[in-house]
View (cartoon, rainbow, N blue to C red):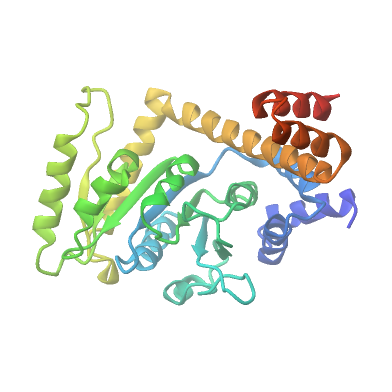
Length: 319
């Protein structure tokens, strides 16, 4: 595929062709040699979509809540993208759950694009290619992109670095409020949702969360105060309240200038990740080569410390 074909593929994705969007995300996931050309072609069209991350322990109803949010945003005639990051199959490396069964109500809606992505062993609940896939959906005209993560526990806070707004789900009787405090999720949540609120213990879970929040760092009046919303996502109850909280947080981000600041940090993280990956590849090319082998021998022999050896290696990489 030539660069001209990449431009044509991006144009088709911009026109809402689902197959073209899927092809672009596949190029991203497979780290295609065309990835740089794809990114360059997408850049003029990005920066418009709201990115909302959903995280929480397995079984709290993330997929059901995601589907309910899709319905709510589509009622506003907004185009919605969903990236559902699944555990990897140990055999194929592909997404274990495939396109989520609970979201199939939206499968025939041309205004919704749903993609399952394999985490492929990546920590933090997200696939390494998620930032690039977000860019594809943004450029393809999605007004809102929902990123639903694996739900792997304490490393899950990575979603906050990718999302404009992070929604953390808990469920009654799972001890999630305490676990959220232990995992550091209290610090990254912008909106808390106590799902399955028709079960016993929902009010207690909401009280626990509010209490945990009150024990954290004191927030000034102009800082965001994370609300706690109760829902029964399977019946659509409370979803309007969640959307209202998401809208309120987005408005606060824009008014306070935090949205631009968040996106700058996100871009800086991506640039750093690309640079570090390239550096690792170059070091890998040197492994077994004369310079790295010589430096390793000098460190083992005790006539060079590893920091000085690393400085010498970096000098060799940049010349």
